[in-house]
Image (tube, rainbow, N blue to C red):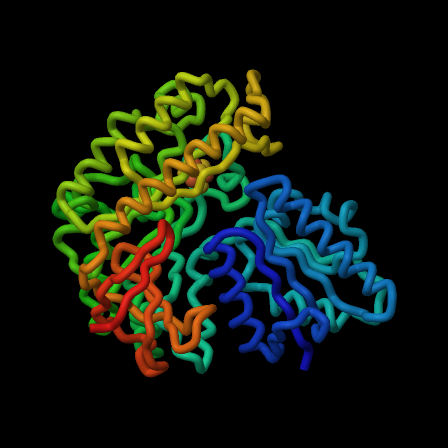
Length: 446
Ligand code: SF4
């Protein structure tokens, strides 16, 4: 039996794709190993969001191939976004690669590996598969649930993105939006529930645009809200989250869902990117900062427990000091508790890469630090308000540090550490919050 090691770079979508590939391999007679040294086959599931991520994967691939040229004869596959982005050109930068598989062919990996091993005696060209495949979004639906109790699981509900943010390579690597059917998604979630999963995070590059233009709005509700309602009806699923949404698809029906549907967690990720209308326009983000702030205000006023996170890019081409001050002001007004703050880095193949007026690295660094400090302060202030409160915590696992301590999350996605027993995993328990930092809450079960 051939042993396979899968290394995943990048986002949660990639993690989810790798899990599905791993399931396909196991089902078809391959053994998964957690150490690349034990593997006959190494698959790199790659990320293209930043040039650096691609170079890292290419470096890794070449390191593995130099071992291959040495004593060990491994089969090497490059999958996912970089495979799609660079295509057959990868055979030049990674000489000796055996398999290149794009983002719509993950479900065919075991079939391709079978083909490669049956051809192994001959001198073969790498197998390259990058075409679009109708219905491929429906194939990312299998999970590897280990013996250990798994409490939370990701579910891909769509693939691709029809937006064209100027800084983003995703529409090129993942293609146009393709949606799964509601009943199919719910069937997958019921199977996860039967294996003990209590919390579901719905995944999509623009997750709340789910079904637009394909499935009908019913009673003023978008297909995404209809999907949330159907999942909400599934007994045994206690919590529902989703990522990553887009502000333009954050309609009043979705905001109301946070009030109507108790299983929909008190947490939303709301990518702002910039607080300047000029920069938003240049990024091709079709909303104004005023509209964005009105969504934040509605979410916070309708649900007092709501915690919000965001994505911000600092140092986008042409971002003046005034533009940055507008971002800082919107960041404070939104009082984000969590954030991913990126220093803009040029991505070849995107429209933004050709824009003039690049911002010096030192200014990007300075703006990044200002936002990070603001985030730390806001997050701490928000967490301090939770001291002495009793919060329902879904116990996920043993804490990485600390004897007898366990880790769980509140509905508002704060990490909580507290003493517990192993049988607590998978349960939702009331925890009194005793102390906090900007990133972690500590408490005791009450
Ligand atoms: S909406 Fe997200 S995935 Fe789509 S182009 Fe914009 S940043 Fe990229």
